[in-house]
Picture 1 (cartoon, helix red, strand yellow):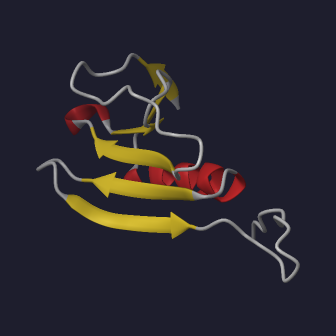
Picture 2 (tube, rainbow, N blue to C red):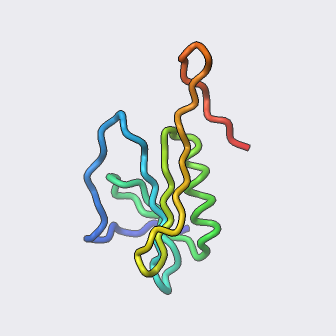
Length: 99
């Protein structure tokens, strides 16, 4: 995993605090796959799509509510995975359960 600089076409405006975190997994051509949280400058590069998606899922599970969006080389969304906020019967937030 290598850290890379943000693309000039990537969105960099953070969302409101009550919105879900959006983690994007994008094809970077021959460079592999890039994972980042929309609105934050950090970018992480992976050689394999599977590793990139698993990394994004792991972080998304720990930072609920979150969404992982996978985008292929044609800039098409091929998968979107949701990780909703976990709430108990009493309305209290529960810790995210990671398998």
